[in-house]
Length: 213
Length: 213
Image 1 (cartoon, each protein chain N blue to C red):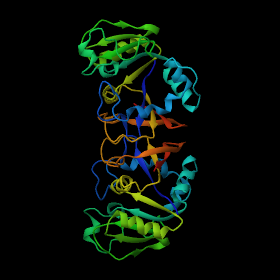
Image 2: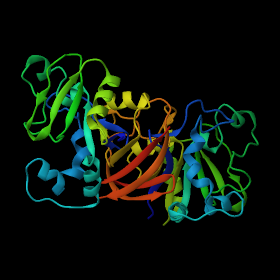
Image 3: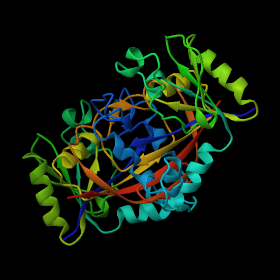
Image 4: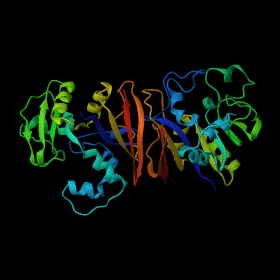
């Protein structure tokens, strides 16, 4: 059976989104800067349909993050919820475009029942209304031998950390101080961690941890 | 002229001390675990008068941290203040022992005027009552061509970061989640950082940043 893991970009002061998140600026003030290290990478540009780009120490980290993932779990806001489109437009298919970068089943935590939405490229959004534990069970079943990745946001990751359901995670620590916003590592209970590795890359440090059971 | 810098161990959730700090447990609950990576090192054991120990990737980091420091600045609590010994015993010389690991002038921020205290090994504690700016001016003067190191604690470091007086800092990120306590990177204002380097070592990741002016 695969493991449960997540990987996210965080600021040096521990935020994965800045203050004042809106539908237009879902990562809040300064939040996009957490991903600066990624924008010039060939592997990232290819994903958004752009040519060119560079290869550096971060490339293998991103390749590994995507490899062997059989299913994703994400929160409602990350799918594209919040006070905006989700509630006003029943045809809304999230803000990931026609061909979302998941290419597997994605289990979206929500309070609103809805039929699955099949996208291009193999991504299907399933809407789970009976809680995070059920979503993880369904994702694990769907993933089979492969891993389940918790895509985010902070609140969803925190719930799985607090339930001791996460086996491994990698933080992409960006040289940014946001000073406020959505903090990743709070309300996660007592966790014993082991540092698996640290990788220095241009404009970011990738640090991976195993959760000791 | 030298630069102004600091280096501290922090938990993955950003604390440099855990909750419930007391005179007996100055680093709070779990706070000592932030330094586990250091205890087996030969360079650390030598400092506390023990033989043996190992050399690993952290050794050069600690050597660099101590090299070229001409003076230190520290807060009252770090010298050994707080509600305990400081106020009750005018002969109190801090909790660093007879031969503190500084071997230079150390400027202690306090509200209580006091004559300098000369210790063994070249450390002299000077007590500064007219604020952090004055302490830094005195430390710079004393350090000459060498660097000034802000020894801590969190509050003292924050004041110098917020005043944009720090040129460089290194975090020793320990695989620990403390869930509360004294957080390092808050109330530091807007800082633009550049990642200088990241070093993977057993049980810790050392990440160094330059503050862009």
